[in-house]
Image (cartoon, rainbow, N blue to C red; front, side, top):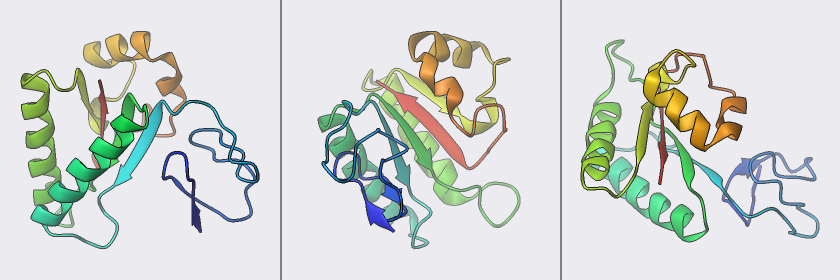
Length: 145
């Protein structure tokens, strides 16, 4: 695995182009970053570590021009939803209430039947191509500025 220098996405070294942002990995020429992914599951962090990683990653991605970000926080091993998921979503909703982000779409609501998701897709139509669209994935949350 390697990391795209434009968006930070982990990609197979055999790929010539980042599937996330379109950067040509040989020349590092790419499209302006609009979409980013933050994987909070990696390394099995504590809640505090996950929140710190989230804040640092959001700051970096927004500075690089991302306006839509998928956060992979996992669902938790208990079967009822993990503590990281709960705390991360609380934090994101607080940021939404403060006006720092506009959309917070939970993975289980990321369908064409959800009213807020429909509004989200009207503003960012390309997000409907995401692999988690219509999957009911409770382990992700998508946000937008």
